[in-house]
Image 1 (cartoon, rainbow, N blue to C red):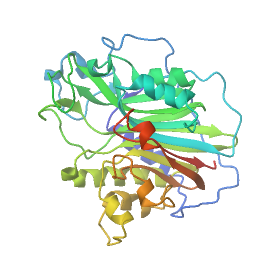
Image 2: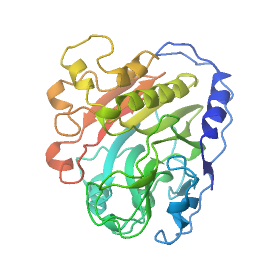
Image 3: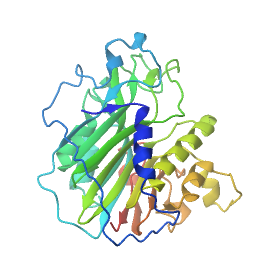
Length: 352
């Protein structure tokens, strides 16, 4: 397993900045580029997630030396039978699965339902690991196994016991975070606990240790690679400065990479709706602006606003693309996804 800490940022940025690819949103890098690919080796052996924790602080949360920057390992495994053949159309989906409390229904839709786009890549947020509120299940692992995919999971929060509240009942300390799932093998796996974060230790109804995490991985598709980022920014508009800092940190990391970049997840930033309504004043939504200023595009920009809501009417779950063309954007029908999560799945097709 790999360790997740603040030093990851320096390692990722240092490697990326040496490559430089300019500011163009469509850099044409047709000549072969050498790119080291270190396969991610997880563990196929199941563990008891109610007792086997990824974070050192789980043993004694009250003694944690830091309320935000906790010491957690990454978890992952391979359930893909074989690496698929190269494709010219890679379907990428992002979804906030609301802890996995409706996991069986989510698996059934993704795997069996004709309305599912059958993604090649899933960039997921809000997955529980061993939490009583979601049946003490390992949500990322169960999704990967059911779908026949590879996965990596990173802990955002140690959820602390509470009787009730906005975070639901938690009987014992458990873990909650973000994941990347892929039909293609994962490599160069890393995670970053954002430099700008806030403490949730004493939040009424949802006490936690930890902070927002960005999960990163590469996949190889033929002679090319795709850089994947699964994000989940701070949740309250009152913390907009933190959201903006997290967006800038994320966008800067992807900007320096030479192949196609897919950055996706729950931005938790509702001000983008004002932009989509026609308010183009600079600074109206600095979260999405951080990406657009660095050459990313909103892969769903061609859709009318009335079709774009991902949490009610709010457009907060986004796929930002950089470096390669995107097409066929889609958003899950509310009648399908609303019973499964408080967010709707979003997808688009990338040409690697």
